[in-house]
Length: 444
Image (tube, rainbow, N blue to C red; front, top):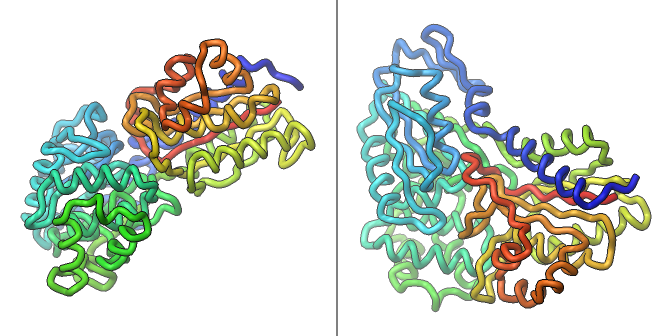
């Protein structure tokens, strides 16, 4: 069956939004938490609240506000107090927890002040208290607490260099943990000996606990030496503030304490639970695609690598569907999740999802009836107000009619302005969730 392009575009959007519904933070919290009389059940853990003196709610991330709202729905006045750092605009109605709006992906003064307040609150906890820590994607940048002798500007400059060099989130967060007074298990160290339970909405490949929001309550497996090795790998030593390099060298020499590792007493009463991840969104998208009549395949929820190269692989699979009926017959849907990277060489504006859609559009331009949608589940793709973009087999032709050069826009990392002119930006607004990206290719 041959579907018109407009139907494919509408279906792609419908499939994407169905994926978002599956990772709505409030619902994710309530699936994993319930209160029965004096017993709080969180995953496989139970807490007798009759023996708990204070309940504190802390955390950071783009999805942490609705997560906090869900915890308030469950516990209400039992909550003593709380502080959560959220991205500007990513809020929710809460009454017991204070929300601090702050900068992301580059940290700002609000984030630093909120992070200090969170750490101070954690330090007041005793062995009779329970800390519920809510973290999600974006939580690392939203918990900026520079180490002693370091300024916020040092961290801001370092973040900008890391975002531009093509480093993965695993690599970026290893460095963030060694520049922080709260991340990499240090929040758990501050709250010891209280009971700590962290609820995590994962935005990292493989749902590695120590990487989600830089693992504030998780043992850190990275070291100062790992950080220096990453600086060399991406050839960015000369681009980083001198204080950062000296800090890492001091850590390697043993003049600074390492982040807490596995077996540290800080984790004796600490538990961490992933309550939602990219595969949940991808599986919901798959079910919706199948209900719409598409033969659907999920490539992986762990796709990473350079965005333009990943786009070419997806484009090749779409062409294979058209020509040979593999890996699925048309009408087909190819789904993938994960988080790619962009090595910035131009001075344009965009994000990995918009760049994916543009690179794919160039690759499928000579074929018919293929639609591409790539979107960030948080509603923000890079430093833009778009979640991503849609493209199809007619996108390049339409662009040329508008006197645009798609390749020039791609080379300049300026996919935002390209799709702004073609009218193909995907704008969802803040979704209040964050489980990496979902990519959809429909072929008929």
